[in-house]
Each structure stands twice: as C-alpha cells, then as structure tokens.
Image 1 (tube, helix red, strand yellow):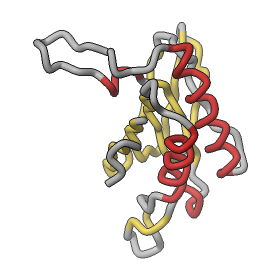
Image 2 (image 1 turned 90 degrees about the vertical axis):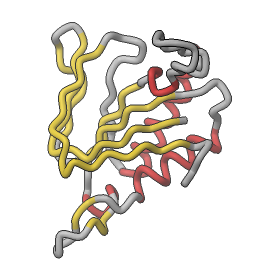
Image 3 (image 1 turned 120 degrees about the vertical axis):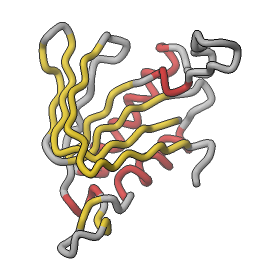
Length: 150
C-alpha cells in the first residue's frame, strides 16, 4: 500500500462537477493498493497516518499528530501510485490491484481511520474520474509505503 500524504489547509474532491468530499485543515491521502495488501498493511497505514507528527505545536515545531491536532482526513483512491514506466514512456498499472480487490481494502482502511479519529473520513468515488483541489500547507508531502516502512 502506498499513501501520498499531503498536509493541507483545505481540500476537496468532485465527481461530475459535484463536490463529494471536503475538509479543512488536515491531511489529503492519495491511496494506492496492491493485490497483496491486507490487514497488516491496513493496520500499519492507520497507525502511521494518524500518528505522524507533522503538525506544528505552539513553538511551530512539527511535533503534533493528526490525532493531537484534531486534523481532518480526506482519502482518495489512486491506483496510479503503482505506475511502472520501466519499459518506455507509457506507464503500466500491473502492480495496482484491480478494482474488485482494491475497493474493499480501501474501504477497510477508511473505516479504520474513521474509528481511530472518532469521526467520518470523507472520500472520493472509487473508480470515478475525480477532480481534487487542495491548498498544500507547508508544503508537507510524504510518501508512505507499507512494503518499505522507513
């Protein structure tokens, strides 16, 4: 599982011109799922996303987590995080889990994040063509990978 985490002052996602998810200060999560991703990857991602200390404390030091800061989360499925461009210029998506495999994993991840935060986590529409708008705060952008948990 790969998650591109962006600290934002606001973010939203629209499908067919209608906003389906919006947040204020928090984290925009672009989530890519591999076919081999399971409960261990989900649990790791929930812990990492909610406990990363990337929000400023009173002294302006990145020392607070999403839990500490009361941050909101917006999760968007993003199969392109597993693009391979090794054999030319046209990306291959072979490493990305197909929709019927990825969607339940994504939904369990979102449910786990919501449970950890104690509030709903808005999402886009799985498999839809989405327009994502954000105001990156910092900017702070991190790539998490459950197969390479640095």
